[in-house]
Amino acid sequence: MTYLDGLLWTQPSWLEQASSWIDCELHQKDIKRIDSIKQLRVRHWSTVLQIPTSIGNIYFKAVVSELAYEAALSQVLSHRYPQCMPQVLAINGELGWLLMLDGGIMLQDTLKIEDDIKHWQNLLPC
Image (cartoon, rainbow, N blue to C red):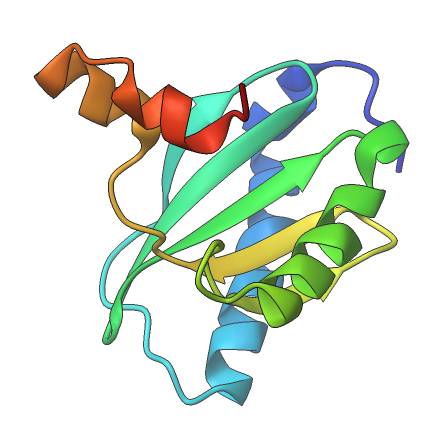
C-alpha cells in the first residue's frame, strides 16, 4: 500500500484495516477496547488514533512509508529509556504502525496551560 497523501488515513477501508490490527493486538495482550476508536490527528505524513480500553487510553500512530522506521525506533527507545517514552505495545514495522500506552499530557498542552518555556529548556540542551 502506498500512502500518497493524508487522505488515505480517512478512508473507511484504511480505518477498518487499522482497527482490525489494533483489536487483534489488544486481544493478544488481554486488553479490552471499551468504546469506538477516535481519530485525533490527520496529517499528510501521519495519523493518530485514540483507543479507549480497559486499562486507559491507548494510542495508535501510522506514518507514510518513508517514515516507517519510526515504529521500530520508538520500540527500541521505549525499551532502552522507559522513563522518557510511552511503553510501546506493538508495531508493524513494514506498515509503520505503532501502538502505545498513554504517555501523559502532551508538551503542547502543558504550554497552553502554563505559557512557560521551562519545559523546552529541560528538554533541549543549551
